[in-house]
Length: 296
View: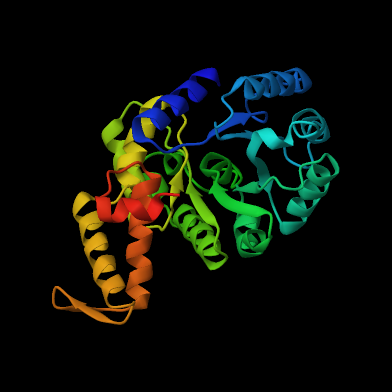
């Protein structure tokens, strides 16, 4: 946990913006029977982080006996520390209601919720879950999703190739991305377990971003962070094109323009603005005429 926070700080200094969040884990990270002790450890680590660090925590599912202890230890008196609470094993919007009620009672009424979608039932309810006003992002839990099918999906679907080719897995990813975009939320792609293969990691991240519509992605190892950033960042030529088109649009007071033999209007202006937003969020170097848009 401390190494992750150190990496976050180093990348922030290198890129000049926060390019990653750190999520401390109280679910799979806690030894069975020592959930309370682990929650106190997580709270201590978070308290020691820099004031500008973006730190989140994954609590236990709402139906787990440790959930209420997680909320008591991690939210009561410390809600301001968390950029969001990650809620695993969400099956329906009722689970979000339950979590939000507990968080609010503990003083965390301002803390957003990120929901992990890890079963077919959750995928079925993804649009309703994404619509909840406190939900900021949906993440896909690949390994739990495959496991929930009781062997009907092979283990290969948890690997680099299988997770982009098995129809049920691919359908789940597309449903999550669509639900998020329908409600203005952030779709976050699942982990890739082959953390020593940077080329495979970057290829997966590229497909998640450019084929499936995900705008964030989980990493489980420091080696994965930079390949993800590269894959999700616009190319230099894309940044230059977006800057030039938006400059021409501004000069035309946002009326339609001709650029490179193509018509552009406010619909495409919104797209090219999103290119610059992604470039800024991933720490890319922006032209001076684009960089000024992000000064405040």
